[in-house]
Length: 100
View 1 (cartoon, rainbow, N blue to C red):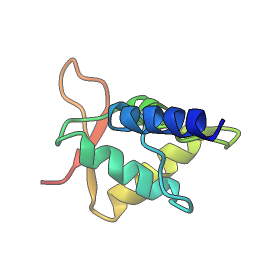
View 2 (cartoon, one colour):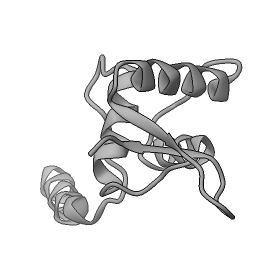
View 3 (cartoon, one colour):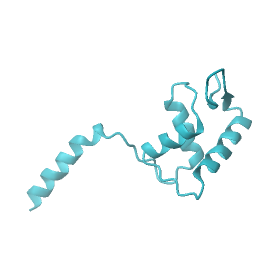
């Protein structure tokens, strides 16, 4: 039985690099998780709903009653701090990107 468990654990470990979702470190706040989403975006403009989707896709559980309100609040704080800027051009949905 121990040999079978070891084989299964080795098999699972072999697939680890292929995992799409990365579990954020315990205690990582939503603000830092949103900063990480912007960092991975490569400077692209992100709509608040895209940020929400990216958080969910990376395995973040949004336990708030209204997660979009929390995301918007954090985006405004990051904008006030000069970390991101709002962007909306003709034919574009409103979004944010990191300041260059």
